[in-house]
Length: 380
Ligand code: UDP
Image (tube, rainbow, N blue to C red; front, side, top):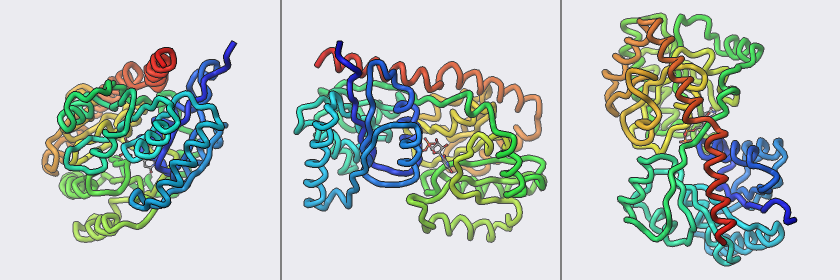
């Protein structure tokens, strides 16, 4: 009997973001009786170590830039060789960027490719235009909103488009480690706040941490006992211009002492356990927004902006609120209403957890993805 089918995953980023959290669950949970996952990273970083630690065979093939033809050609050749060496039967690439490498090498090696979109496609982006030209047997979108954007940008192309909602390890987010939680509270001196409102994600304008701060200003005028926690860093751990602007904003808004910048954290279950609610103030549509599900899994209500994939995650009035994007007043009002009503907050938190368990559990996502793999392997 044939052994498990080797499936090669091509991941362009070595740091954890939403796509990486999704692939982490897939890599470690795929049914090993049927699938043998292997990973190629196009950049090194701490996430590579995490994948290594869960025993996934991997290779780092560092790239420079897509516009560097020498490096591009060398990378494609190297990927093709790796696929052959591993006997890969399918290649799964993350993001359009990953598909421009993984998909092209797969095409050259005559291996069927899957492209997991992970973003909101746009006909204005050259990279998306290039990526849709690379053959894929299936394109996976993380939400109906992302699938719709893909169709709007590129029409109903030949390639089938599937929606798989990302999922999280609900039990992990439900069970913070008491010692880690105590350390976190002590390190960030969180005890000084009666309530803690958190925002988790890369520090970049699209994530709307500046709106979070503007809303924080309005909230703190009414409730001086609230702390605001910003978790995450700029891309590649750099102190980006935006990150510096946020720190300057804290001073300008006279929020010093109320706002805590925690930097990148792995202990997200503990961050959420220390928080009363999560705010996700994205100003651009996101394909999904995994932190929303993570917070819900941890039993925390979520206030998100009414755009993109967040609409498929949050049920307004039941598991949290959706507010218009770019509106700090509406955001502050939603925060104040939840902080002021402990019963409502608790009920919403419970409903949020139930929803995460029912619709956004990692096992469900992996089962759906395995069905796509099976279809392609049996059909190829
Ligand atoms: N994340 C983390 N530590 C941080 C900030 C973010 O582990 O300090 C993780 C977070 O838990 C989530 C992912 O990064 O799993 C962010 O996913 P999301 O879909 O919200 O945003 P994306 O990165 O896809 O834009």
